[in-house]
Amino acid sequence: MAEIILITGGSRSGKSAFAQQLAEQQEGSRLFLATCPVTDKEMEARIQRHIEDREHGGWDAVEEQIDIAHQFESAMKYRVVLVDCLTLWVNNIMYEAHRRNTPLDEDKISQKTTDFIVAARKHPGMVIFVTNEVGSGIVPGNKDARLYRDLVGRCNQQVAAASDSVFLVSCGIPIQIKGTGNVL
Image 1 (cartoon, rainbow, N blue to C red):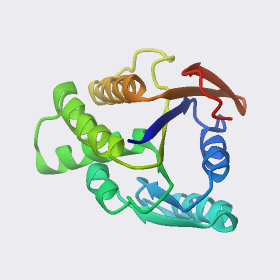
Image 2 (image 1 turned 90 degrees about the vertical axis):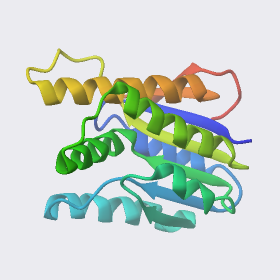
Image 3 (image 1 turned 180 degrees about the vertical axis):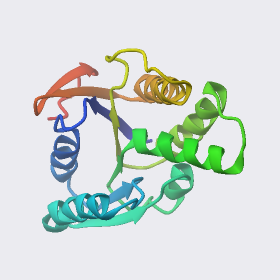
């Protein structure tokens, strides 16, 4: 049964760097499960930088924008699976729902989140999820932005409840807000 860790914080707070550091402290093989689609040249450059940052750590990488749960079936051989990030995953789910003209609500995102938590829990090693904390800002001014905030908030709450440890990263400093294990 996996040890599940959630790392949250604001944009550019140091979440991904902390997640990578935590993963690289573990012995064995590592898988980086990337949820970010290439949408333009700037995003392509960001993704390339993330790849270069992991080159020295013996990482394998898989890009999966939608079906995180399915990826855990083939990830059993890895000691650590790092999923970065859930906020982009929710964005991708919203995009697909909009593209297919299918409704999306908190119940549906909750089921999809449950699916990948169940799959992650079966992993024999450590699973680290990275997400943005979106609940500290103002109420968004439009319907789609409010839905996005609500869906990410629902996903984050579920993953935090299922996690053994939760860290909030602020200004590059990780603060453990759940769990008592010596993870660092």
